Image (tube, rainbow, N blue to C red):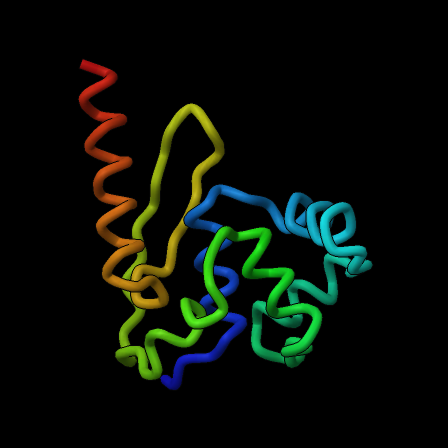
Length: 119
């Protein structure tokens, strides 16, 4: 399966523990971009392209990433293993194949830290 931008946007949002509503709110407050949840969903599912001049820099700003970050991986393997994270927060499912090695390392550090805090 080929990598697509929407997949990386969704994985990053989930990694950050943000809801679509929170992203939409930040896009409007910080960048004056009005977007419906349906529109964000179609972007994340690869059914709508992202405006490279206005929307992509705004997503990068909301997620605290560079624009290049969203293009680091060009191909993803055909299998899609995922990791389910359960904390006191709602359960979050992260598509591990859509994450960069750095994201995976940050996630592992966060999980280890949380486990150590519980003991």
